[in-house]
Length: 306
Length: 306
Image (cartoon, chains in turn brown, orange):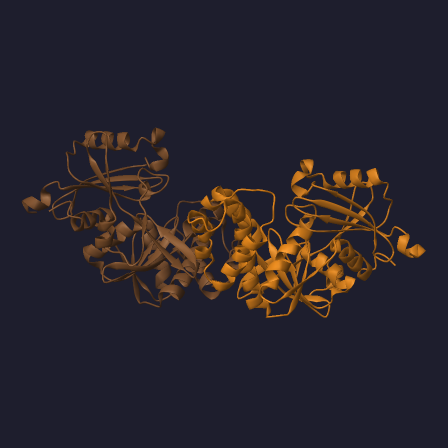
């Protein structure tokens, strides 16, 4: 690693609703140090974001350098609300939309804008995902369809390094609501194992009955009633139904590509890889911390670093 | 009304998970008296169903006569579990499947079987709805598609007075889980009004994007963010999305009929009537207490009454 590569150059903050990640980045965008905690924006006492940040940086001895922040910290419930940029947007457009804020201790934090798009009169939004995707693109994954599993999963089209279209699927949040608060959840038992076959059955059920999600979900009730699925298999079966339904909808909207790039937690990437495989689509895994690389690209495009 | 019509002949029990309805029926199937309470099977102390029934009948002075019971009281969590009858089934098949049980006080209760069907290897079930539909059919609504809104909504085909196909949609339960336990519910405000226009927008959104329910639901989040829907409109908008998605799925499965028969609570019948109207389907309303008439038809077919 060259001296520039190992020289601390930028601090990146990926600050979400329920998680906080801080990165110390070198001169070529590599992650030199990394800090993660559950102190998302909802857990910061008195919304003292400046104080929380200063404590984190002081603890680690990270010095004075530019800071780029992305995620829900840029929303109305966060620290500095940035506007939404329109599509298409890449690192240059996101850099142009940065909003700078000086903290009481004199640090300058640059907040990344969110993205919005309108489809058939209905708006969609993202905050944070744009930065992760820009990072993954810069890491060599290039143009194509990016799939980001999670509470509000995103499917995103990247063309010529810019986001040109995307859609949000509430897969993760709906999974949690159904598991936690319907009769389906009361039937589920846990044994700590991933039941791959039950998951695959769920994916296949969604594939066969793409338009019938409200009906297909009832099979989570009926299959155990007739002892066709065990209680310990139901969670993965329902996960398969919902991820399968998302994939069917995503492919209908974004085209029948032969591969997509997967971001997010490794276990979720693996679930999506398995589900995509059943419809003949290769899911390409990405490393952790794509957000940090995206922050670096945006900072460089903004001239914050050399 | 003739003497036979006003003569108490049969007691009908429509006993569900969270509601109890008892009917005193005349010799031609008319409801002479009616009692309703929230004492569904989950609220009966010590599962003493016989005691709860005896108290109810003694309070009303209803004498010794045959009793027919339908609903979740016939399930594993109920009083006497009846098997599921296969399709096609009408009043004759349901009568043949009645299970008799004598109570400690000598009353004879006849429990109606549920129905099951298998579609593409996946079972579906109902308990109670079959009796309501048989009743509505006997009241003159005839063959056709019956739609029963609710927690677990049913679409049912009646041919030659028998159930020949059906499917369950978890519309009501999913609505409640999303309203109560997702970010969408946190955005909703109540003003006690039915917002017909917002409801219609939801139905139209589902119609335009039938396969994309996981995506369309995110518009409940984004439209208020851009002040395109008011917080007080969101509940009805989401209701429209889910009912619209059910209708799209039901029509794809049961055919593009020009009218369907609606059962259930008047307010839900009205919502479905409005939603169906937007896809050119007439929703025909039914009176309350169809279950009682179904119990009468089944009792007569079983020879329990003259």
